Amino acid sequence: QEGAQAWCGCLAQPAVAAQKPRPGRHVEGLVLLTRMQSASTMSDDLLRDSTGFFDAYTGTPIKAKRLTTLSAREDGPIKIIAYNVHKLVASGGFTNLLAKGTVLRVDNRIYGVFSVYILILAGACAFLSMQQDLDQFEVTTMANLESVARDLRSFVPIILGLYISVTLTRWWQVRTTALGFVMSAVANSVTYLCTEAVRRSRSEQECEECLVDIRKVAKLGVASVLAMTEQSAGILPVEMYLQSRLLTPAEADLLLGVENRAILIWCWIGFLGMQILDRLKVPAPNRAALTAEVTTATDGLLTLDAFMDSQLPFPYVHLITLLVNVSCILVSCINGFALAVFLKRGSYAIAVSLVVHVLVVCIVYQGLLRICALLTDTLGSDMIDFPISTFQKRLVRECSQKIDATEAFWRLQQRRGQGPGKGRAAGSSPNSGSSVVSSARDGASPQVFPEDAQTSLLRTSIRSFSSESSTLSKARGLASDLRPPGDGMRMGAVLSNSNTSPRLKELAQARHRAAEDYDAEVRRGAEAAARLRRQQKRGKLSRLKGAEAEADAAPRGISNDRPT
Image (tube, rainbow, N blue to C red):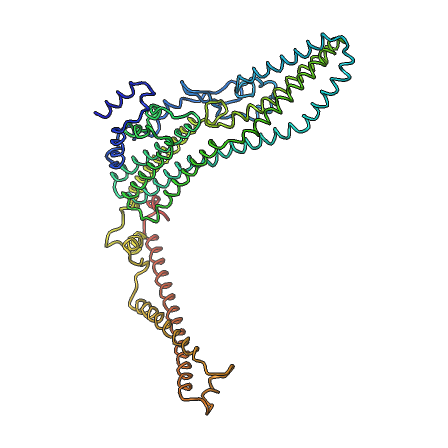
């Protein structure tokens, strides 16, 4: 309560003062983080609320009148969620020219650029109207200007198209490799933790505690998505995290003075996830999935840093902007001069077409250039930027559905008697699969079928055969290394040769005996293995027949909740 009162007093101060680092509160927050216990510190009403806590922050989607679906907060910008491409193509571009999200509505600053080119057109027309010899001007000056404009029209669209391609590629990579990696890591982490909770929770209290912590993991993941927008909007006030109920006041206090808050939040997710796995007693090798998701999210955040910190080269973008501006100015001047000529001649239809030509060229060139400028910062507040609040709300909804479905499935398994704590008693039937799992967890080899004395004897003989065969193979190799001199000399020739020394004959006989013993042991081992396989097959068939007899003897219609 004292901490909450101190935090409320901090919120009453200006936003700038609230962002100043306070060492005492940071030490208190670090002590809180190191002593964080999932069931005791996070089982409040805010953490149990899994769906409704974020509605007040994101607002409700607004359906536009024409083509686009928009999303907006009460105090935030309007973002495009989706648009109807079939309706757009069917109705055409002219009827939807002033719809929300088009190049004429996405940025109002483009009207200022159009005004400049219209003024250039009017100035060129007025200048030429004051000239006396229009025919001479048309022959000399107009021809030179048209040749320059023709040269620009030959390569400006190519260079501008390449710039648009590079910009769209970077925009999509930010969506997939940065924002997409983080969002998928949140969803996959929640899925993995829910799976382990279903498999290993042995009591209702343990399952409840794990699900409360998993909800906290989901909230921290959504908070990391919100923190990613700080790459564009700057450091956000911590009130936004509190308003959306993603963090507690003590956790939000830890974010003060931190530049990359998203990576810090993912450190918390890794810590809390490992704490959940510790409670569930998950073996260390099985925790690699959670570590991989945390690493994937960190890679996505670093990729976003690379895109935001490394823009396209400034001389390249400046040159493209200059070429587009020069091309539009030349078109405006040439059409202005031609407008004066045709107005003096009385060709008003051609004069109107010249004005339309200037508007079309300026809209296309300046519109594409403006869209590329907006796409360089996809996490901002422009209309065509990514709707982060909508992504967050969808992520919360998916994670909450997974957690609720996990809890319902765990209770269903408990009612069926198939939960983790069922069927693991010491005197359980060997037919149940749980005896195999329990024996494997205790470190013993799982016994699928009971062994009689003959099968046990066969298994023992095979183990002794393997050890003896390795010894015989070593002896055979030693005897082969002591081969008598001479290539191709057979064993009989060595023994019948009177000049062979007694020691060499003794070694040859030992090699021959070792080879015979090895072959005999191999045959005996193969026969023993075949007998063991036949014995196991007979035992398995007898078990299957017993199960079928049990199923036939059982009453019908009451085994719907048991697997067939």
